[in-house]
Structures are given as structure tokens and as C-alpha cells.
Length: 219
Length: 226
Image 1 (cartoon, each protein chain N blue to C red):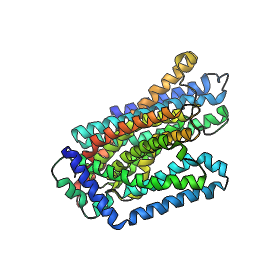
Image 2 (image 1 turned 90 degrees about the vertical axis):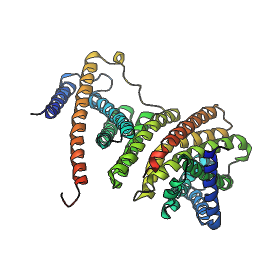
Image 3 (image 1 turned 180 degrees about the vertical axis):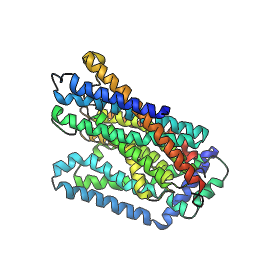
């Protein structure tokens, strides 16, 4: 078993342990009830989303500086995961919000900004899929990856001024320690899962590019 | 005048000349903008109070929709005749192309707004004239931000298939701060700014304009590489 596969199994094992702890072992939240258990997935997945988009930004910069296609492939692999994580965050969030806040959708800065991240990085992926030449494709994608990261904090700030409802992020003091530990486990587990999927997707992208560059007559 | 500004001005003048020779693009754009204003009334109904309260938001959405169509043409005409490649061959910083095109879009959007603001005032029954000074500042900052981002993404998408679809997809999320701040400031000024919120919106808008302008100018040469 190679190291990457081991990483994948480790992530699955930790997610399984975290799920058992969060779903069965820990008691339901006194105020929010059973639905609070969703947060053990919602919060780590939201973290993975931010991590993924930060990776896109870093890889975009590296590509623009060094012009090696490797960085572009790493960026697009992270962008795909980021979009999936963003959609998952939104779905889990609305499922949690309906019983807790009484509404499916609140026009809150974090929700609204997360929802806007989906079209932003979908745009990134669509632009990539439409450009034929690998170098051009990488260049345009890197530019979008960089601009997106500049605009997102200001999008957040502007929506924050526009309206605010989301509860502030839970600090360790606001959470009972066992909850905090399971949450921490979630962060580690989902980050490892991200790392595994990211590197797997990168290998696939590298193989695809190799095939593309080798031309149709040989492939 | 520096060489960069002179080159940018030359590109602006070229575009103004070619636009004023036909005027088709601008006429179509104005008609479209008027139709958007009508569509809002059709969707909302003839409730003059309601339309008056929504006027700031409706006006900016009309500007963004119409402006996006016009921004898409920034590099399209150029590209049809292989013009971008020729422009790149001229000596000097390619950023002049961005600055010239940006100035052109500012002129077009300003011309659009000169018509659109009075039209909205008449159709929605709001008195923009009473707050003319502050609203002029909002319009200037909002239009600048819109053009900065729009010109940039227009250059980025011009080579792509389905660019008509991709430009709004990239542009609209980036415009969120511009739209929120412009609408926020417009509505605050129209209401006489009782809560003093307009200044905050203007500051946010100005900061976003500056940040995006710096980033776009800095990175533009990468977009235009062959």
C-alpha cells in the first residue's frame, strides 16, 4: 500500500471515529437538540472550503511566477474540491438553519459569501474547460484564482455591512470541551481527506495533461 | 503627459472615433437600458411609492445589465480584425491598452448614466436632482469600479467560446461590493442620509476601486500574453 492510499484510509478512519462520537457518544445539545450534530461536519467542511480556495490562490501565484503547469494542475484540483466543499457547506448549513433559525436561508455575510464562491470558482473551472492551449488555460485560470482571492474578503465585508445574522464562530469557551475535541477531530479528519483527494485529483490531472500533450495520433 | 497616458489617450480616441462613426452600439444600448427600467415597473406594478423606494437598486441593476453588454464589446471588435495583436506590437507598456480601454468604457457608461438617471427619475418618480452632488460622487465611484473589473474580465474572456455567458459569470460576483455600496449610498442620500451610513459605503466603494485597479493594472500584461 503506497503512502497516498494510506493517507486516504487514515482520513476515512478518522471521519468514521468522529461520526460515531458526534452521532452516538456525545449527548444532544441542550439548546439546539439533535440538529446541532450537523455542525461536526458543517464547520470542518467549511474550513476545507476555505483551505481549498487558499490553495488555489497560492498555486495561482506560484504558476504566475514560475510558469510550470504543475502548479496549474494543483490549483484546479483544489478548486474542484473547494466548489464541492462550498456546496456541501451550504446544504448542511440550510439543513441546520431551518430548525435553528426558523428559515432556510438568511442573508447573512458568511452564507451569502459562501454562496457567491460557488459561481466564482465555477467560472474559474468553466474558463479552464473552454481554453484549448494548456499554457493559455493555466495563465487565465491563475489570473482568476488570484483576483478571486482579492475580491472575496471585500465581498464578505460588504455583505456584512449590508446585513448580519449568523452566530459568531464558536470559540473554545463557548463550547463544552468534549464537543470541542470532536470538532477538532473533524478538522483533522476532513483536512486529511482534502489532502488525499487533492493529491489524487492532481495525479489524474497530470496523466490527462500527458495524454493531451502526446497528441491524438499516439493516444 | 507621460508616454503611458499618451498611448492610453490614443487608444481612447481611436475607440471614440470608431464608435461615433456608427453610433449603432450606443443607440441599441440606450434602448435596452430603457427596456430594463420598464421591465422593473412591469414586474413590480404601478405602485409609485414602492418604485420610488426601490429606485436606487433598480437603477444600479439596469446600469450593470446594460453596462455588461457594452463591456463585452470592449475587445470583441478589436479581436475580429486582429487588432489586439497589432496593438501589442506597438512599443511601450501594454498596460496602456488596458487604461485606454478602461477610459473608453468610462465614457460610454457615463453617457449611459446621463440618460438613465433622468429616465429613472421620471419613471419611478424620485428626485435625484435634490441630491445631485452626492449622487454624482456615488455614480463616479460606482462606474469606475464597474469599468475597472469589467474591462479586465472583458479582456480575459474575449478569446473564449461562450464569452457572452462567461463575462457575467465572472463579473457579477466581483461586482457585489460595487453594487451593494452604490445602492446603499444612493438610497441613503435619497433618504437624506438620516443614519449617516452613506460615508461608510462610499469609503468601502473607494477602497475596493483602488485595490482592484491596482491589481488589474498590475496583472493585465499576463492576460494579454500570446
